[in-house]
Amino acid sequence: MPGVIDEFVDDPPDPSLPDLARITSIPDLLAHIQDLAGNRPSGYATQLLALARSGIEEVALTALQALLNLKDSRFTSEILKMLGEEQYSSQRRFLMLKIILESSRPLNVPLLEQILMREKD
Image (cartoon, rainbow, N blue to C red):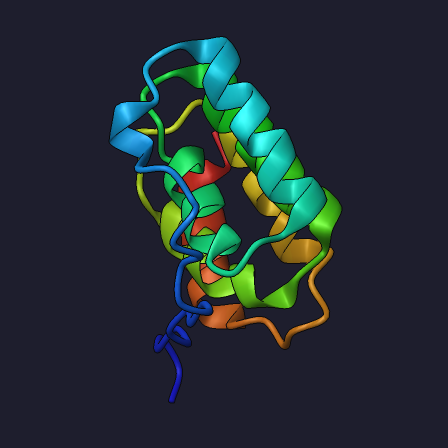
């Protein structure tokens, strides 16, 4: 059905993963992103996606870059949802678009066209 986005499903979080709300320093958040991307513990994708929505631009861009480098097509649906939201910077939006376009999943073309039409200016 056009316009419907697949739901993202991740593995249950590893109990050893820290609560993101308790990590308050930017260097610690960046180190956590590197750890998630390097080790890929159970539930890593959920945490990376949450970090990609961070209000701290550096953290969000680093998380998006990690998602891009992982090339996991499960992220595509969540990234497409994020791209449809207007509060993100052009740098974030660029990385989101790269993740979507480099995905091996079939694209929801009508929804992507609708989002890109808003981006044309």
